[in-house]
Length: 147
Image (tube, rainbow, N blue to C red; front, side, top):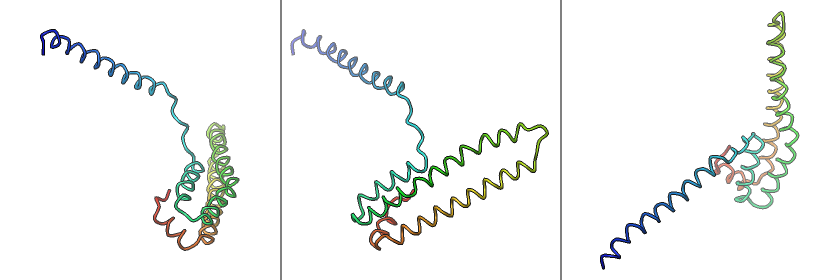
């Protein structure tokens, strides 16, 4: 190599390194200003699971699973509404003057009874759905990563 080429070579490396660092910095800055995705609720996680596992099931089993998910959507709304209504009720009970411990205990008892009823309905739907799947479909479901 001639001396002039040897002297220019570090400059090419410097410019290339600077360009790569600026590109990486741009990615970091762009990523830091991107808003975080909204948290996934149980219905979105279950929907993602059904879509993932449906790809490995027979068309009939995938249809059964998707229909069961669609039929359960009102149940998910009831669960969400129940949870959203609890916080204001709890806040009201905590701010009450005089404090009503019996009323707060009754609030918790109602919430637990409602949760138990919703959980029983979810479990009944789950068992019904699984009973309509083929044995191969249940096997594929068992082999998948359950939520």
